[in-house]
Length: 149
View 1 (tube, rainbow, N blue to C red):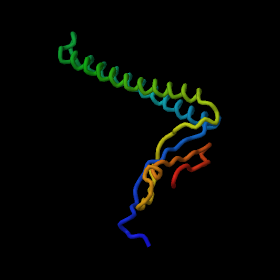
View 2: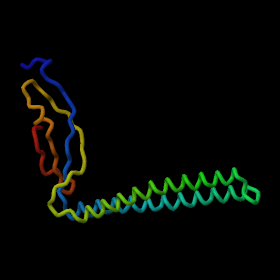
View 3: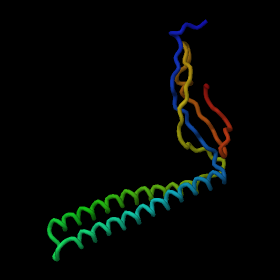
View 4: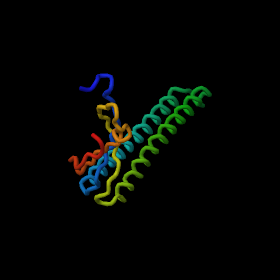
């Protein structure tokens, strides 16, 4: 019988790897294309909202536009520009990821993410080995669990 004070239940990170297949490549590219389309839509909406806000300020102001209205217009333009840069950065990241996915070779293992799992640690266990666990997946099906489960 093991004494209660000589065992622990702990959390550990588990690396999830995928084996590159044509199906996986297609699914990832579709997800990335969806993100890119969504970002394009957000950029378009942002620009329209900015133009509308500026037009409302200009219509509500006397001609020539007052210094306060000009400051508000510059502020709106700066905010739109900053948000647009953020969205374009995200879009460029997604485009780069699409290029990376295209360059992966079939049957190559790549890290897709991490999960957490609970494990029991007892006196005398090798902690380093207990922490090195990987799951390998092909098209959504677990192919292998590596490490000291």
